[in-house]
Length: 105
Image (cartoon, rainbow, N blue to C red):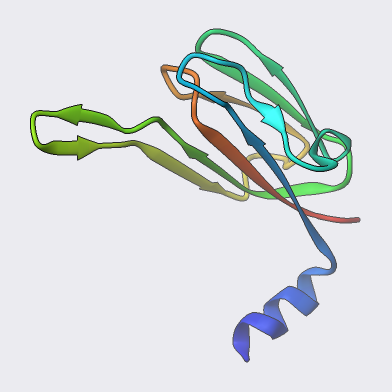
């Protein structure tokens, strides 16, 4: 019940999802994500700009890597990034996916 109350207080939220098909490839939008958050991708950096409101969460997942029998993977979640209007993601390598939660104005 608390979660419903928090979402209602925050207003309407939308999600923008981007995924890469294989390691080293650029992220591609799912659905209408490119209308919600715009990406400019480099080798190790992603510049994002919100087109639909304030970004409240950025979640980045890296590609799994095997080290012998242990599978390793990386992920980063940033809540309330700076102004919520734009930012830079420096993940080291091109990530497997990025999800943006955006609260509409």
